[in-house]
Length: 481
Image (cartoon, rainbow, N blue to C red; front, side, top):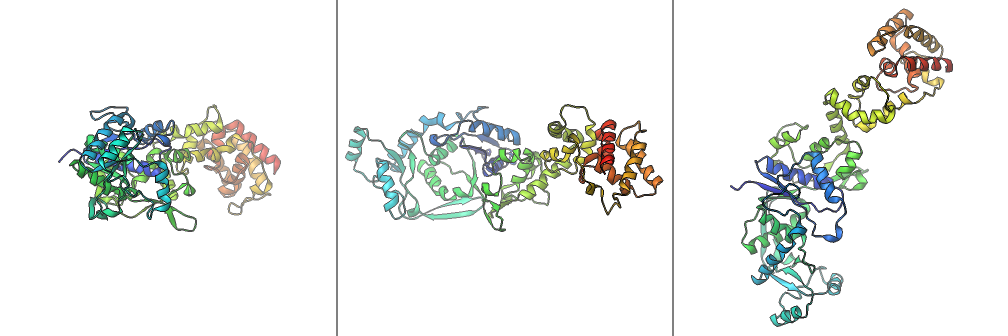
């Protein structure tokens, strides 16, 4: 059996969509799970749709998610060049070979005629006007320099079948297949033709792509057969759907949320989380494991786990995945990810970041949630008397001033200003005052933070603020009750 070779062949036309990234991931996993090679090929034959900088986006995205290609434009390889526009001269000879073999023909129809066919023909497709032109007519048009395309000559009767690893054997009636263009008037190949030529010349063994290309597979097969080439293994992937507000699903689009890798990263999702999650959009592991590193995906992936059924992109599940990844980080990893967001709020000052790390790591699902959660540390609290009232803690406007004044007195004597040091001062005070811990700590936390919800309790808030700022806030809060 030939070594497995897959290729990811994106067009540089914009951001990397979730569906494109899943295709790249599955191409990678099909190869790596079988000890094969993963190739990157840039398909830029549709010159009118190219977007400046989009090729860089492809490289950056693959790098961020860890999909290292074995061959490609930037790393080379024995089957280059790996950019289709640089292979332009290789396609025309193959198209002309098909003309000689009677499997293709030159079409001289003008754009105006083709446009009119879309309005008048029964199926809006090409009517094969040039399919059987007399040779002398062809020679005359060529001599006059009439522009032409080369079209594939489809069989007019019978059926064409192909086998897909996910969807099984699929058969289409040949009469439904249009004589597709292989080579355009500018000499560039069409997407479908270039795919077949390049896949053959690069020894691609497995073609992995979205379900929307199922209808094109018979055309590919007829090309392979016309050249007497070996047909690759097809792996078509199910659609990715998004949830609508009414509970129904439809094909994933921007109305469901961010659909590009870059957009999801900007929203705060970790690249490795996105990779893990989209691996499960259409593939089921053999057990109940859901959290996978890329290495674990390589070890567990198999084509027979790919489903025919559409996969639903669930943003709530993605958020859960992100939170689980954050919880499993080492304290050092968490702080490294969190630090830009800490600095966004706190500036370049020196703080005991360990306090924030410990209270935030179990509580954040995305790192970009951090600024909102810690903003009160950098902002002067604004108090309303109602904040100091909490029935559960039995805190009210009568006992709050008493609690605060006693807390200030005790805390002024604390030398070890840490979470433990503050704890060891306040908990005995509550016992001395004959109140529950919450009765004392509620007004202390409100005075220190100015809000009812904080990451961590009163001890953590006071310790992080530092002794001077913490006491200043408690005194200010006492004065405003």
